[in-house]
Every structure is written in C-alpha cells, then in structure tokens.
Image (cartoon, rainbow, N blue to C red; front, side, top):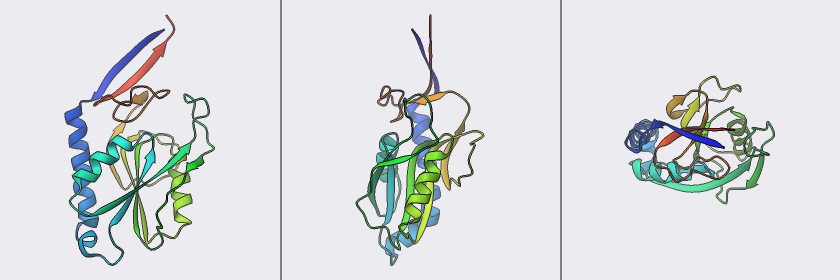
Length: 182
C-alpha cells in the first residue's frame, strides 16, 4: 500500500487561519460577550475532528467563552460518507436563549453540519452560528458557515485533529491524504 501526504497548510499558516476566524468572531461577539445578558458565548466543538481547532480558537478569541462538545457518527466505514448522522455524545450545557457557535474542523458534504444545526436549533438558542476551519469547495448541501478559515478542494484532509481511520490527528499542519495499491 502506498501512502502519500501532500501539505496544504503549515502549522504557521493554520495559526493564521485561526487568528483570522477569532478576529471575525470578536467583531460579532466581543462587546456582547464581555457584558451581555446571556452570559459567555457557548462554543460547541464537534468531536473528534474539531478538538485541536477548538482548543486554539478558545485561546485566540478575546472574549469570554464556555465550551461543550457533541459527537456525531456519519462515516459508517470511516472512509465513505453517509447521509445519516447520529448524535453519539450530547452536550451537557443548557443552550436555551444563549449565543451558541458550533465549531467544526471541516464542512465536507454538509450533512453533519446541517444535522447539528437542526438538532441544536431545537434546543432554543438565542442565536446559533457555525464555524469551521475548512470548507470543502462545492458543498452539496446548503449550510451557512458564518466563520471559516479557508476553502479546500478535493482530497481527504488530515492533520490538526482531522483523521483518516483515526490516524494523522496529531500532525500540526493540514494535508491531503492518498492511499493507493502498489
């Protein structure tokens, strides 16, 4: 088996993407989060792929946040996307009336993003926005990504928390991954 990692973004470039997203979020939430009536903005990270991005984003924003996590399953064989999305770990925070931002590593086909928006909307947040480090070009399903770092083309994306069959999460940069028979 032949494996190839092709770099898309270095660790330094990823840091720049995170900083840019943080500044955009501050434009919307900075003043409100410092003294708003709803309390700190709640960032809900989509596990497992967003955990590294979420940690860096929490440190990068200059306003008070709380964090929670949700986990979904949508890759039945881990290498082929499914349109069915299951919530396998729910949030523990009450989001009713609160400003909430869903944080994802990549919006690929948009199915998980839409499922999370639909699910969390049913819990009555005051506002609900979506943040993703990366957005796949030509996302099939209509999903509004309010904050994102970059648009990526085809190829399986790994590194910076994102994986292929649970591998490559620890890479500090972002890469496309190819696996071919030799």
